[in-house]
Image (cartoon, rainbow, N blue to C red; front, side, top):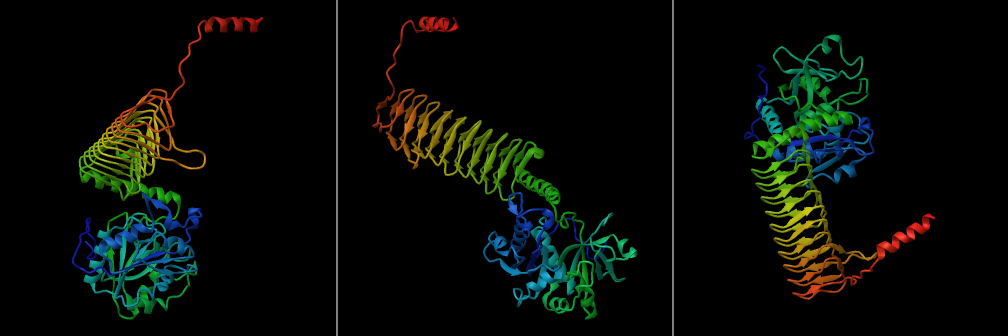
Length: 478
């Protein structure tokens, strides 16, 4: 085994994690998008935030992101404390690091990552920092051995095992046939001693097919100064999965999705069919909960313990409590507290909160409303901009008419209210505690506590109407 080989499972050590520099200035033209490449979402998180969060989780003393002309747009998604350096126009990986020279002032060592390699995690960052510290080298290059190395830069070693140079292979003429036959490749992540790094970078030329400053070209310059360059050989196939096209993004997303699902399953969550389940990276799910097939948990979702989500359910930026059931439904920016039931075929819109043991049944839509503890909206109802009291039970097709064409108004439905089927509550309106409404009512005035509100035309039966209608129809046929 190579003396710099990384074990399959990285471990957290006691070494101090140095500064982390993330290169994110590339224009990403192959994405064919107006959106900067590093802002494309991957399992609910922009690409650039994957290495940023890995560095922060590892405990990096500072995180610097090198951005291009879209720097302001990229900067808006970065967490507080992240430093920004600008490389405009982009002129290669070495030029990107040079752009961060001022931001790295005073740092002793730096780990260099790529903003479009999102599968690097905190464990890897820690392991690289440990290996770099242990080697005493001025530079440590992460490498992999591939049966088909493709266009990856080849790692040329000296007999003692240290890295002699990295040869780029993207364009004809960059590498010789002998160099192309090498199976060990540059994985695109490095650790450097800062002072020797910048001293060497100022001397790197652009004599290559792209006319750019390659970061790997510092290696022979460091060696000329008597510095060691160590290799960090890893069998982790995911760390070098970069994204240049939307097809690459889909490939990486499949890997990330499997990792997310596995993490939840190992933490005590049942996922009935992983192949049809999509869970974003920041979702939290409690023990003994179940996610049924064709469910999507997107954004900042929290699900408690012993709850069931799905099948065919979408949760977006919502909080779900313990022992909740959500079936065949769409929930967005809402709270559903302990013991509630939702669905099937129900839509819960932003600003809604269902308190403990509340029910939103089949074909119900609720928007910007508070549904009290134990309240029930069983089926076929629209409740918008309303406060529904504890223990209320709204009959089928109860509607809050909350918009007058200019403004939204609020409906207050008291505790233990019972509305009849096909009741329209025209806001602004208050229905008092323990009151009722008659079926088919269009209620426009407040209903006092304990009263029965009926607002409908008195029924009139017209005798003989059917025979008269038939006679009229016969006359029309003549």
